[in-house]
Length: 236
Image (cartoon, rainbow, N blue to C red):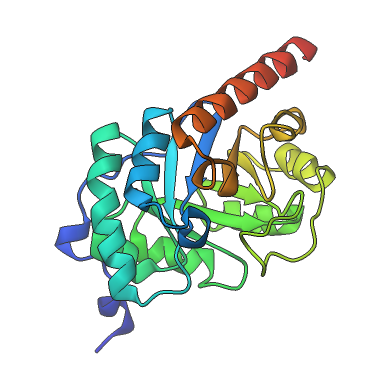
């Protein structure tokens, strides 16, 4: 059997995906069971969506694929009702099984160009990067957006490596014609600095998933980001 026949999207995963947000000021929320604690992730995601989250990423590295699919099946109606894309971290197979709107991969995952071939041209493809070279390769591979980090250090992703700070983000934002998000230890206190460095939004775990009031936390992040974007626009 020819390999290409093994990776063609099935008819059930060829529906029109929700596109990546085209505007600026993106609040991108990543799920994490450990950060959620005893609270249901569906409740937290519902609250984040009410607060104006623009993207939800399903991230669950420590569970079997069956459990990840079950969580995705619970989240997908919420994101679809809100008109917000659901993106699956790492697991291309889970994304296709769910008919999710996209996939996000890191530098140690399936290469971005292969993921693009598997998921087709319409679905969202996000790539984690830390250098201009990685970002340019992601753009050439057909990435929809890139996330840059770990910016400040995060307990949610112990494999993220040492924080890189804001200068690489600024360099990447100048070098690629893609939406650039900051990730890694972002909260209300430092989100504005990420936007001032050139990002169009932030990707967060603890700042929303771990917040006592995820809806209010999402709204507050959105307000901080919007203010920073206005400041950046005034500065030219």
